[in-house]
Length: 306
Image (tube, rainbow, N blue to C red; front, top):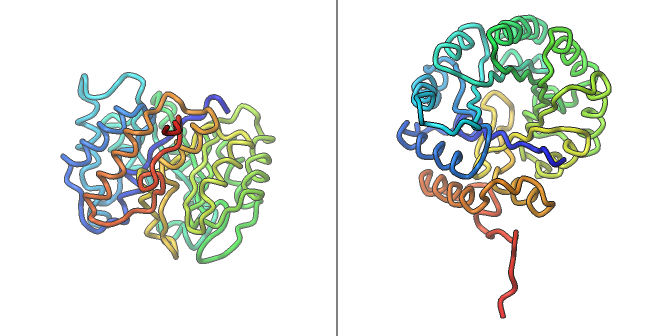
């Protein structure tokens, strides 16, 4: 667990359900704050149709800005979500470091999210992953709705494992399980991640949980215990998939880092800077956001007053 890495997805998953567009200048400030805090992987956006998701209309420009010399630390990785071949092409052009792509284990969610069946999406995403790796790019392939679906309910494990096996056959070793609907519970998480790790112990596992029913942090720790190395979270707990039945926020980045640091992990991240960022995001949207530590304050390195 000493190598846990935070993958910040607030700029993409956090903002995609927000109706009021965030100006690019504001996004740049938030990204710079994340870099200053020590977060190593930052997802700047998704390469989707801007008419369907206006919040992501400046994704290409945002990447072009931060891939200029001197705009980001050398140890920071910029990731972007792609759903199809056109998105992959756009990402290649503007300098994405890590391509994130995925297939939903739920037929209903797959159709609503991509307009494709799970089988068709798996074929196309696998081909895209191969193309990305051939171009020398890092690729993370995910299974969305891996723990349940708001439309279909429980998702059979074999549906998830079938997609994972297809990824492994294509040579993809960075694999994420996404709890799109927030249905996961810790024992289920531990069991499924353990099964996947048994398929290939060299896999780099990632976990993406939504806090729909309040189990996000517990699920993160269950995934870590089963070998997950990358944990995805969003500042202030923003977010939710607009194509699921009940969109709900991601695990809050500052809450997750706070929990990890109390366990002696991720000590290279400046928690106070993350809390300041979350408060700034809350002020921008002029409402209280789901994160807890931004309201309660940190007890990491707590010192009793005389």
